[in-house]
Length: 138
Image (cartoon, helix red, strand yellow):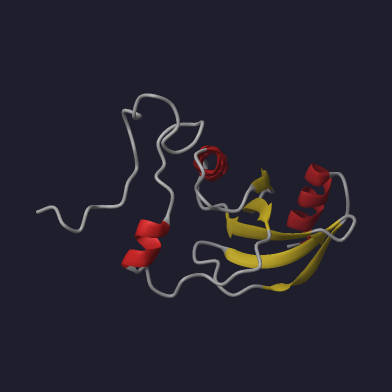
């Protein structure tokens, strides 16, 4: 993990200190870190299991950035990188708990995502829109 922390520090231009493990992190262990100046962040590192693991993580970052531009409430990703053994990403720390169950109220409470300028903006509906399924349609 020291190599990962060194790589993150080089990417962010400052020291990174581990503040403790976080619950969750289904795909990768989640560690709370403090960046230079004390700003909290989340570091997730996963073993480099195949050659394109870094490329996959970079694509995931682009998806997250797009979803945020559309208004979806997800933490920002600050950086993505890799050592010889791990691929990592550094993201915004949000002081919240993950939902234990995906309920209809959570699904329908999310913004409708459609265009890079945000949900339901402009005179025409977007061609491709991610919407929760309508529970009343057959």
